[in-house]
Image 1: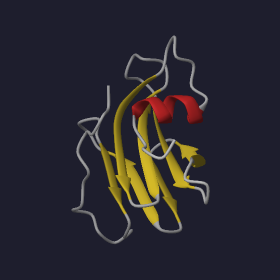
Image 2: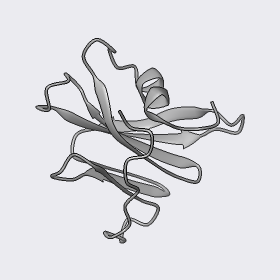
Image 3: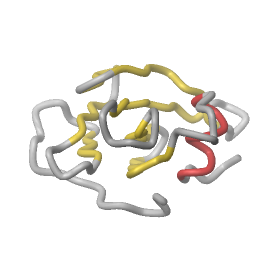
Image 4: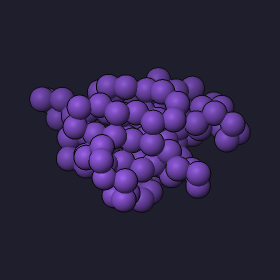
Length: 102
C-alpha cells in the first residue's frame, strides 16, 4: 500500500463501508490525512492522520473530530468539507485539494 487514497483511508481507518465515506484526502510525503463522513449523512466528520511506515505501508496515527496535529503534520476540515493539510502547523494557507476522494 504505497499510495494513499480514499480506499486506503477506508481500509486502515476501520470505517464501516455501509455508512462511512471519505470526502477528501491529502498527502505530503510520509504523512497523509483523510476527512471521513462517519455516518454518510454529513453530520459527523472525522479527521484521520496516517503515517508511512518503514515497509512503505500506511498506519493510522490519530483520529478525531475537528483538527488533528501530530509531529510533522496538521490537518483540519474546512467549512466546505475539504481537508486542509500542512506539514507546518503555522501554515494556514497550504491545501491539498481532493485527490482520489470519493
